[in-house]
Length: 113
Length: 115
Image (cartoon, rainbow over all chains, first blue to last red):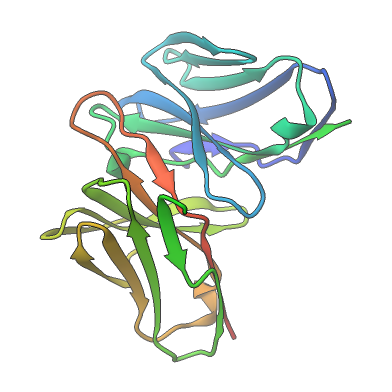
């Protein structure tokens, strides 16, 4: 079993829809949970991160972690065509140094105008 | 100018050739990383460096070597390229200070094709 599982998609939704992106993981030592966004032909960039379980909101984006079920979610409200990108979940061990990051394969999201 | 610059951006080479991908950064970060990205496999860590004298293997270091020439420069070499090293390569830096989490700052990638 891979440490981090993420459906690669593509996931295509109409503009304005609520998007739910998800990952599961197997390593209970993960304490930090990052979401990176990668536009076509660009490097990934950090979108959000949370520590341990719970929710974190930033504008139209909400990150949610359920450590009991090892489930990570990213919700996008009022989705826009500019949100079309690949979203990579990246949980990390305690301490959070990037050498402890494990990236999911990424979900390719397409927002249809 | 970009904070993390990779050269070349695209390279086509032949099996058996030596290839060097270069990375330079102006962010002043000590930690630098090389990742490989393949369709369906996500990002895989090749090598990482915490400072000029500290270089570590990642999960897929076989067939690769690195050199940290200065705090700002980190190069990835393929001594004898093979077709399954065809991929998109990313350099990244981190501002990790030992607390919380360190954000990774990526370059724009170097696309390598080995024929």
